[in-house]
Image (cartoon, rainbow, N blue to C red; front, side, top):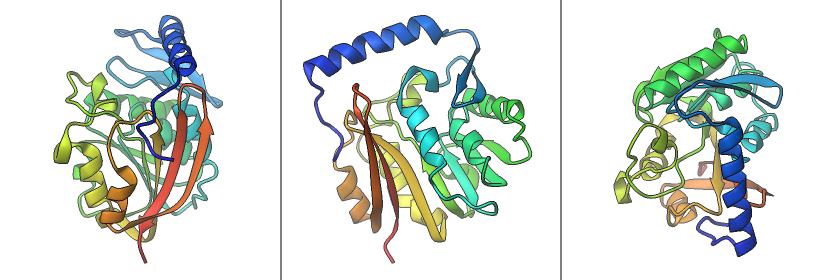
Length: 233
């Protein structure tokens, strides 16, 4: 199943009201928010994507427990946001790097590493895509890309809009990810049927990446997919 699927009227109505109820209950634009996700306490700072606002983040966090992460695996949580992926990955790996282009997100990830007693296992770094890990390779890369086309107007929007054409972060990610994987390395990437980035699976193939498996869950507002892929061998 690919992205870009138009939601039915019932799904659009459900999504409209769910988002606004969540926004009223848990989102504070200019204040830090403390919330719980699958037993983990997390803080979300202003201008950082709030994983409690959407069903995609709990599903991705849950999927990490099924990712077969070894203690000595090097894990990269690319575009970490509040650090959710890094915190959950650190339950299994002693070597987790969390990166983000948003300085508020990097600060947030560091706080959440401390809050969850994982500061010695999570190294949060500031930078765009693979810039903070130049020359490094990983056994697993976790990635939740911005699903939409368009230029972000502020730090918060970088979680949703990835640019246009060859400047879109997905294009840059797919064309460079192989350089940062170990020989047995793989990627787990969250995707959605509401994504408007075109031809994702075709772009994977053009970059010599093969899909190992796809997990999916219908969460009413969309169908969430978790792709696991690696360079063709």
